[in-house]
Length: 423
Image (cartoon, rainbow, N blue to C red; front, side, top):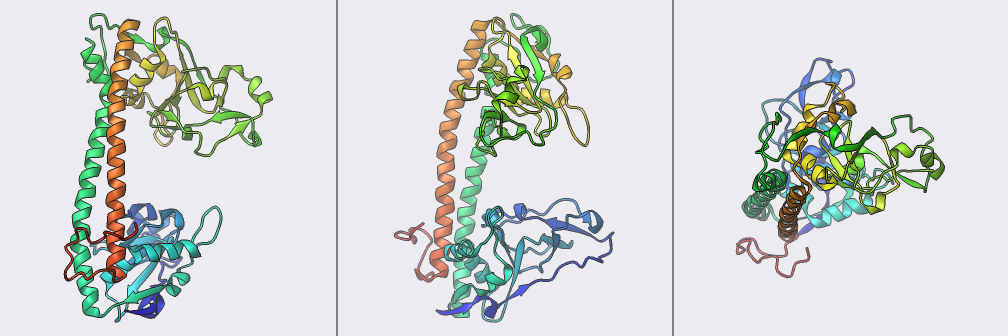
């Protein structure tokens, strides 16, 4: 193999839509997030006009060229541009490489997905908040090239073997989706097993010992979090200040951009002081997301979230939490949203939502059953996540070993060829 600079065997295409492009020119825009780590490009269903396109929607990339994310956050967004009937315009966050005479386009694409190339991009990325590499720097990275015939053999081998692994990854992801769906119906199935109604409709009536009650009859409090301006509000340390971005998958994830307010500010607003097992309902944006307050966030304040505190003599907090997190509960919340451009959830609407409320003993049974299912689901999800990671590692190792010449693809079957190769 001979070593070259990428720019000596491939062209760094900097072609872009000019600023004086016809405002009515329409195209399909591919952002960095539309390219996954397997090299798949998700092409949007709808076209956009140049006049309404984001300022970064400028990069032109001919079919067969290789697009490489220059932004380290999306480091593995690397793909071959597909042939499409409609014009494609890519984000300026991509570098575009066009193979020259010395390198096959498929081999070039696989080289850019190999670990040494990715490591070089990481090493040369600069910037603190948004680390990136200049497209020109990509041209200075090295590529080892075997003969054109060997490049074709390697590309043929990797086409077949990565396709096989990709099918396995797709099957694992499908299993993951099915398991997630199982979790979303755990509460409704537990309700039926406990003698409750089938929650297939949002219009609930009386069902034996399961009366449908509006929330205002079983809540001690339903109030809005702080809705005023937050300018100059935050401090480096103090009382945690929860926002909708912290509510994800039914939990509070404060590691996602933590915010704090001063103890004095929080003390002046006892109405939004959170208590143990208060239910937090997202009001704007990701409507349908709910969280529950654990011991670590007792005393915290919150912003633009509904705080639901149950009357514990009638309603267990975790029963309400599971009900709202269920497939049925999420859609019940979404039905109550108002506003088209900026969907919002009003406390007045949530207050009169009807829920099936059995005895406390039955609620405890439903909660226990739901959480048992959830624990099983999490165990399976963890195993599937590990499997996905291993499949992705194997794919990466296979590409790296093939393009760097660690094995002869003419005799390799793809199975066990990466034994001893670091992943």
